[in-house]
Length: 180
Length: 201
Image 1 (cartoon, helix red, strand yellow):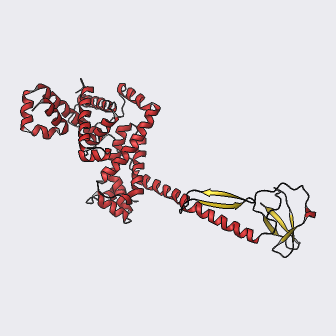
Image 2 (cartoon, rainbow over the protein chains, first blue to last red):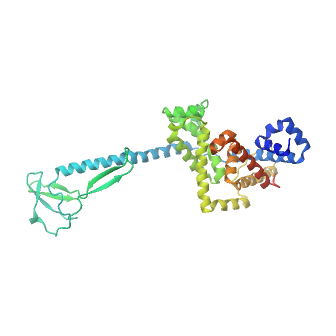
Image 3 (tube, one colour):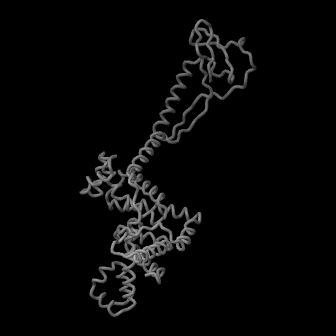
């Protein structure tokens, strides 16, 4: 056996190699390979300590479990809850538009009270006589929102730009504007 | 989840694959037993590669969470240890490359070679005299510093096969290289270490 072959065997599996009679015989007669064998043995001895230098914190299983629960909650929010909120919003908007007054495209007046003349309790007509401020320009009637992480793929939710809320005022013949 | 040590003991006779199967059938404790079985090994492995204990714990936690999320995809074709070490190795490689981009790893290597800090904890051997223990600690620090300066491909192969005491087959699967390449890298790593430790060994 050559020194090169001995070197290969010693680095692959030191104990097995040294148990090989051919290797043992070579080591007896070759100082360089004996030195290599001794140095590799010392590295083997030291490396065992390297593998035991640190221990995991005792609460690691708990931390893994807690973090996994959090990630599941986040995934639920993105994949289920958010699309669900979108669907609820769309449904609510659709229902609102169905039951709202004919003032859908009426001018927007932020922060001002405006009054709608009540006709039959459900529909109402705009009474310009009650208008006190100049009308502002018309707004787009809707805008689209893309929800990319819905469970069934991306969803586009169409929402009205203005949601007006009116409250009936018992004893008076108009609906009071609350907010939008 | 309950007491980790108690749960780990109650699953002592179970192989890793049996634990994964039990977890997939709804037994959460089986997963905790897997964590308890591998947590020290992974933290040690990552700590030896990164020299940042808190980061090693965080990355070990991340490796377990990835296993948690993808357990249903585990085919059992290779050992569970191969899978989790591969995840941990990839996380460590990402971190090492991130540091290299920032130049911190080089700085650490240079500093660690000169500093004799107290971050090492060699196993106490009651038969050793204080002088011998000190000598051993010194040698251990020099070995760690020498390993840190190995090229990444040799360092990872050496860590897995020699420090984590995995087989050549597992090492090759974790690093996704052939068996022959794994043997060659470990041989080269040992010869390089020997050169770097002239006068120490």
